[in-house]
Length: 244
Image (cartoon, rainbow, N blue to C red; front, side, top):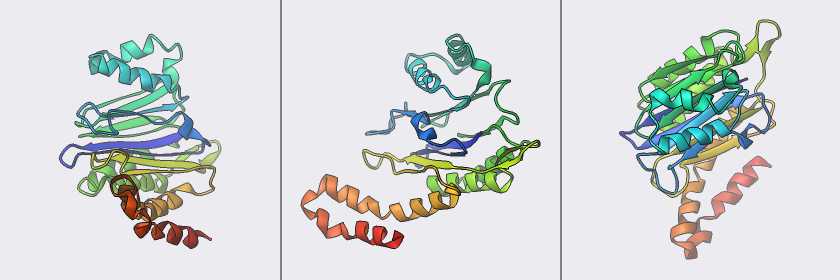
């Protein structure tokens, strides 16, 4: 009941993930990241465990990769520790642009994924393949845009193409959405935003990403020039007052 995009751009040192689902509080199990903060290294990776999610698969994938297990042997290693492997959908993208994804035979139909250079579009519990195709196309069309914009456009394309749902019950609304990107320019994510338990989270996600970029200067000042924190802190009150 989730559709997700993950992408990396080694030329700009960017990597990120965006996702939306009807599952409330999905952020407790998703995504799994490693080696991206406080420093973004060549070993950096984002993993999206989906469908009937077991987050241990995401952590185990990271452990296996760190121990030198090849992508060719990854599914064998993961599946032998998970008796319900056929119910899983899981994808991973690295900071250097490697991709790996599997969609289990019992993942909620329709379930599929599309891999391109340094990116994955994936989803399950959809009325056909159109949302994943639309997300993959949007990822390619926005390849030269900043990572947050590229991922947001892809999610929006997935929703426009039908999003979640089945032929039997029709469309299913989203209730949760997230985006997280890294660029190595600071010891925290470049973008890290979630919308939870909301009737229409994708428009709010885009609005928050735009607004919260105003916090960049505040975070940098607090960390690296703390005596000047309140010289820039007014933006926090401006954003708060805009909501009330």
